[in-house]
Image (cartoon, rainbow over all chains, first blue to last red; front, side, top):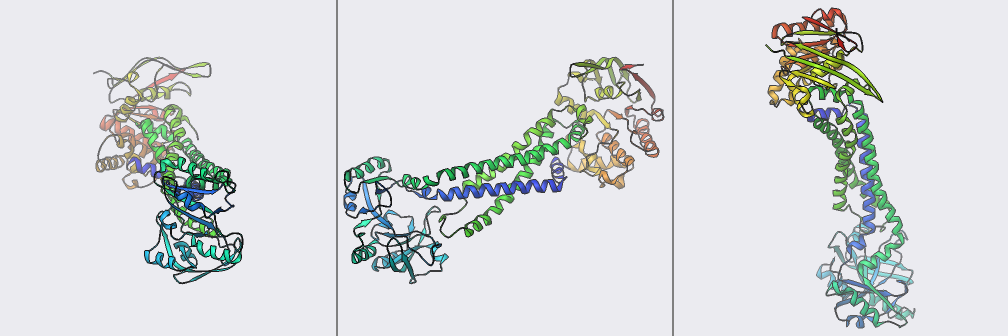
Length: 386
Length: 223
């Protein structure tokens, strides 16, 4: 018989109470992990930002296009290595609930600036050869069972009409934070159609993306680009990709902050649940602790008994919560409309934080009851009637 | 031969709010090794308090308590705990077994502090249970035992470390006549056969008759 056995027996003394406490901890850990994962998913674009990329958009709003003619002028700014651009196409595939990014891009430069989109060379070559070809993300291919040679019909909204694109490539994301749900096709194809239809959209692009040689010069290069177009009909605003992504998120910023705070409030709730259980358990055993002290057990032994029980409950609860989180996150993602969160995964640091929080909560929850049980005099404890 | 237990001018008082309540007044007492002493007296006379001081689970307000050559008033809390583990066996009125441990595990409990390896601890615990006649109840939990059996397990727990003294606080107070007789007989055997020094607090004159000597307390004083 070891002290650990007594700790385990004590943990199982009130099975229902221990079970409910562990389940409470598991649910709280699950809620914490889910909230953190949603916050992470929301910020995924920011996390995926490259330090050496700048985004140039219309100074008034992102929705206003920029002249195609800016491309060469931006390319000549010292420090700029490569320039590409994109246009937000939007459109409807199957129905309006099927959301994923559809972008018209400069096929010659886009993949140079975005090396995290991994396309097999033969597929990239085939894409470049065919005017109405497209490249889709691996998750899009999987979700809609698309393969090379399939046709994707889109109903245009910003660019009206029926559009058909042939899948010539499927890219894989290099990093976990790379969006695997984009569809990319030739801007030249869009431009030709715009010219044919005289839609006033010809010669326009949505935004420019610039790869720079030295991220430390981002501020100076941004200023230099914007200076080129100052006082023109289409003034620009250039910023780092991270700043650009963050400006997108700012509209939902307070909601995300609230979720962020909530996730930590949940840790506090776990602490209260466990502390309440441990205070009750230790109070009920005041007499027993006094008996143990009488037999020669020290305050340190009492501390180990209470803390050990608290840790067992918190570790079991946290482990169950962590284990359930993985299928729960998958189910949560499936329940959301397609494309809401292109990148939705449990970050390793979220797992680490959840685990550390579970252990820390176990230790902290034991402090008050352990301190009381350690300090109570033996004669008082022996007289205690719980 | 010097006395095993030597109490010199011990007083003990408790403070309740602003009131100082005296419990023991200038007690001096000597108990020889191998003695079996019954402490008697009315409720509130200070019997249990005196027992607690001798057992090192409480400290006197003044005076000294020396047991087996050690002045308990000079020991720190940690040293006093270690001293109790080595020198004192406790028998309580309500047995005070740990309900989640079996009889043999309860008896083994004090040995966890001894540093003995597990097989030896188990052997000692089984031997102690055999002495109290419960070899066939080793794996029973306290709730599966009668009151008399529980008290016998408590006695086995008290003697398993072979302590210098056994202290018993109303050991038969919660038992029927037959069980009380068994427990008293066992304590008598421990005293006579292995010369265990026993100090017993009791209200029961019949129980006190088993002791070799009876000391009476009244209003905190030996009479």
